[in-house]
Amino acid sequence: MDIHEYVQAIARRAKDASHALAALSTEEKNAMLERAACALEAGRGKIAEANAADLEAAKAAGISGAMLDRLDLNDARFNAMVEGVRHVVSLPDPVGEVIWSRKPPSGILIRKVRVPFGVVAVVFESRPNVFVDTAALCVKAGNAIILRGGKEAARSNAAIAECVRSALGEAVQFIDRQDHEAVKELVRAVGLVDVAIPRGGERLIRAMCESALVPVLKHYKGVCHIYVDESADQEMALRILDNAKVQRPGVCNAAECLLVDEPIAASFMPKVEEWAERRGVTLHSGQAGTEYLSLDLNVETVRGVDGAIAFINENSSHHSDCIVAADEKKAARFLAGVDSSCVYHNVSTRFTDGAQFGMGAEIGISTDKLHARGPMGLEELTTYKYLVTGDGVVRK
Figure (cartoon, rainbow, N blue to C red):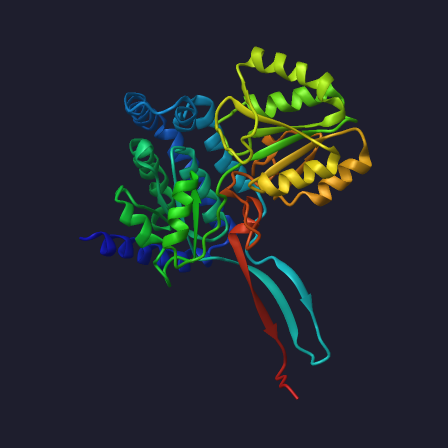
């Protein structure tokens, strides 16, 4: 079977499964997800063995520390992955929710109601837990899902797929071929795939968008800023900076650029330099817009909150940006003026995460403005339709 026929066959199975899934009750979907959580627990040893083999191969191939971190499905992450499935079970089902209803003078009743997309295709790199997170969210929202992981996690993904599909059946489809053409065929499967979501680096995302004939929800990269205003508590600023940069430098919500208000640069920068030396962070300047995904940080000075807003809107990826300030008026201006999916006041950018936002495991973080923006949970995996009822009403 050539790659076109292979992907088309998978997409048709997913489309058929989506029709059946859309008709299931919340209780039936929750029962499927609980079975998936149990299947993962039962397959823990096999998954761990496969992940260890992937890690060993990645090290031999010279993959960097940050990328190894993403690939590593350690005990804590495995537990969180399974708990994430059970958390999705506990969340309200968005399908069937009436967004609004109204009754115009004609006498008809119009209801705007949430419904599943149908088939969601997710292409992801490195992080094997993405397989489970996205499958759980899609099934709870009534969608079938097609998953295609990166070659670095091929063994891990295959082991996870075996466990998850034993519980979720045809609702979860897995592309286990690494041909680049497989992704191109997937995002061109008009009529079978309703939306595609890339989870990976900018190169993957751009390649998918250039090939796609179906809608793509995406973020190209995470260039996140911390702006420290002259009114800031400087110790608070250092705590937030440390968390945003050092906790997990290889993720998209990690800080990549520090902006310092000019009036405090002389007093604050020595503290930043001492922190950087102690924490192993390399400071740079003049590298606006760079996503390091490592212990590197660009540092610039700006003139007040308006200078910070202008700098961020020009150089950020519109992902997550923060102001540290005691002045509430300046903070309000920053929150209103920065054009990013998540804007923070005295909070680390590391909170841009579906679980932290109470959505359960996220399917991604969108920096688009249509159809979703920011962390995407269950609601963002639905669209809507209008249900119109009456009693023999005709238009005059």
